[in-house]
Length: 181
Length: 198
Image 1 (spheres, each protein chain N blue to C red):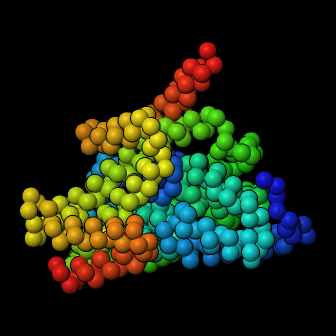
Image 2: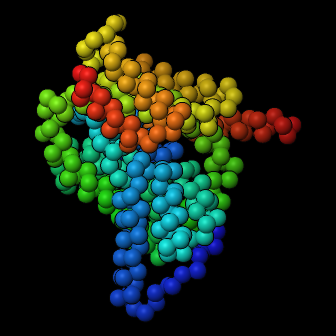
Image 3: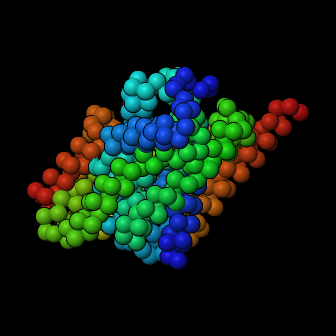
C-alpha cells in the first residue's frame, strides 16, 4: 500500500518536472517538507551523491529518496514512478506532433512555466544553503558559517567562471571540509 | 524527423528480443557514463546512438533534445524514450528507459545502504559539510542558468519572484504554482495576440 502511494508521489514528481533534473529538486523538497520524511541536511547529501554518481541528477535523487523510504523496492518504485510520465507523454507526442515544441500553445505554456521553475529552483537553492551555510554552526557571524560560505562561493566561481566539472568541485569541497572543519 | 535507416528486425521473436536488448545495452552505456544528466548526456548520445549505431541522424538529436526539454520529465529520460520509441515502438521505449535508468538504480542502491550508515562518521561528517556548501552553490548556478534563459521581460521576473516568495511565505504546493505559470503563459500570449490583431 505504501508502495502504491510512493508510486503516485513519484509519478507526480515526474509529471511536473519541466526543464530537466534540477527542476525536480524543488518538487522533491516540497514533498519532503510536507510529509516530514527526511531532514534538510540529508536531502542535500542525497543531491551531492546524485551529482557525483553516473546518471541523470533527477533520476538519481529520486532513486535515493525512494531507497531511503522503502529500501531496494522503494528505489525501484521511485524510478518507475518518474519514468512513467515520460513514457506516456513521449509516446503520445510522437503520435500527434512532429514539431511539438514550436506549437504556439506549447510555447505559451512554457513561457509561463519556465520563470516559475527558475524561481522554484532559486528557492530550493536557498533551502539548501540554509542547511549548508546558515544552520551548520561553527565559526561565524549572524548564524552564518563563514567557512562554509567561502567554500560555496569558491565552488560557484570555479564552476561558473572556470568551467570546472561539478564532480571535481564537489570532491574538492569534501576534501577542504575534511581539513578545515 | 524521419526515422533513421536501421536494420529493423523482422525475423521473428528472437531477433526482436535481441534488438530490444541492444537498445537496452546502448542506453545503459549512456546512463552509466554521464554525470549530471540533461545536456551533459548529449555527447554520450552522439557517440553511442549516432556514431556507433547510426540509429538517429545528427540533426535529429537536437530536435529530440528540444522536444525533450519542453515535455514533463527528466530530459535524458525523455530523449531516450523518443529514440527507443522510434526504433521499436513502445517496447523499444521501455527498453531505452530501463537502460538509461538502470545504472542510477544500481549505483544509488549500492551507495545508499552504506551511506546512511557512514553519514554520522566523524570524518565523513566533516567532508559532507564542505560538500553541502558546494552543492548549494551548484543549485544557485542552476537557478541562474534557467533564469537567464527564461526571464525575458517583466512578466518572467514577476512570475519567478512570486513563485520564490510563495514557497517561503505559504504552504502552497509547488505543483499548483507550475500549473498557474502555464495558464498565465497562455493567457498572456492570448492577450498579446489579441492586442496586435485588433
